[in-house]
Length: 125
Image: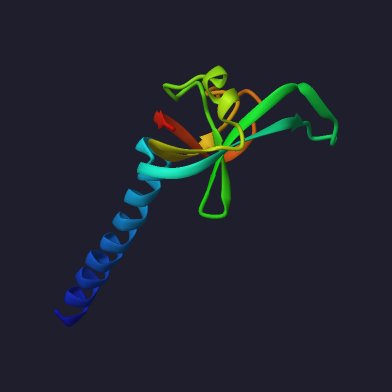
């Protein structure tokens, strides 16, 4: 009987811990971590391929805050690159989601950079 109680207790405790971890991962990889009225600086960088070659015809936009730069994934955002060009180097406030996944595509069969990125839903000067 004591063994049964111990086994049930262990299963219950592990389920709670795993549930919390899974929920956090679902938040970052799925909906994303909600960000509201965050002050950030608009940054632009020339794309550099895996071989270290710069491609000045391709640029990436980032929002920099909390000592980190976050890639803006325009295919999920409500803003477009043209609206950010005049704001490069300036401070803005934004709403959106911090997510994790593919940057350059939504197709997992296509080569892409991967990591944390921003889905921007609203941008203000």
